[in-house]
Length: 349
Ligand SMILES: Cc1cc2nc3c(=O)[nH]c(=O)nc-3n(C[C@H](O)[C@H](O)[C@H](O)COP(=O)(O)OP(=O)(O)OC[C@H]3O[C@@H](n4cnc5c(N)ncnc54)[C@H](O)[C@@H]3O)c2cc1C
Image (cartoon, rainbow, N blue to C red; front, top):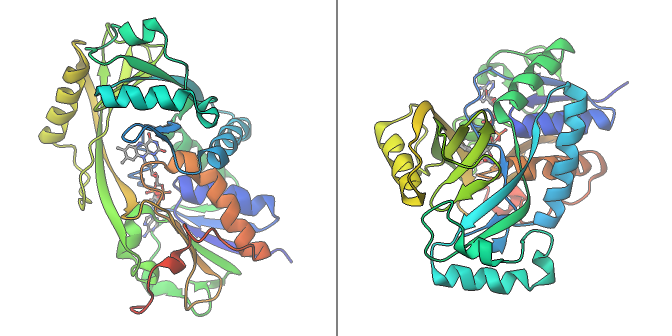
């Protein structure tokens, strides 16, 4: 008989995990209450660089190729267009930043991701430009709302998705039983709402609100994503996503006037683009203070797992981390200690 898994949450974490488990012959059942406030709100950008320190993103060389291949395979499974290659143009915020780029572009480890600075890059007039600009290669974006929506339709059509709320009173962790069904494995993928769920409520998950705008502009370039203080993501038809705010310890879901002003001011500091705001979105990221995901087995209940803490980079990390968690579940492959929830004390469990 096939082994069975219950997945709670159908955001980027739960859906990646569902594909990985199914590829190992495990039958999945997913529960999602149908109101996603993170994976569907995200800009879905995969940016290889962290501009603050001008470093490659953590485990980039593991995550990036696998994510790229995963989304292109998923497009074929779901029959929708999700993957869009992207050039990110970073306008340097200081001389120090430009010097760092200069050093990195000479480093073979960065060769695949950074274009060498040209005189045109340094003088580029796509934004107010004091310190020059550089182009990041191999970035891409995923149509996040479409990703979530088409997964819900796909799993629903296969009878694998229950569109309902997971309710704690029907959950018996010692038996891995939810309502009348016992599962071989149960994996919690509830995003920022995990904090309010008792099984893994002890983990130090933070709720970090983010807002973005959808604008129209006839001036902004559509062939690259401008970046400094904010990102400007071209979505086609002269529409752009501008983001994001970072509002710590804030799980509220309403777009605010302060958020709108902050984003427009950041855009204004890039340049004068005559933006017309046509949409305003808010969501909550599941973040962790040490900036590493929260993945692994419950310290007390056998075969009960969590897959969370994807922070601001869920679209880049989830495909690889889902595969690693499934290898851990099915083959007992050890998890990277950096992501394993065993790094946190369990005295309150
Ligand atoms: C404004 C903003 C911009 C972002 N931009 C990017 C970006 O450009 N690139 C990037 O990689 N990441 C981005 N992120 C981060 C990214 O969205 C997260 O890393 C990712 O969505 C987290 O996915 P998740 O599956 O863990 O959580 P979620 O997407 O929140 O999924 C959790 C699911 O669990 C379900 N659920 C919760 N509780 C229950 C319950 N009791 N019963 C049933 N179902 C339940 C919810 O309905 C939800 O669908 C952004 C986030 C925000 C807010």
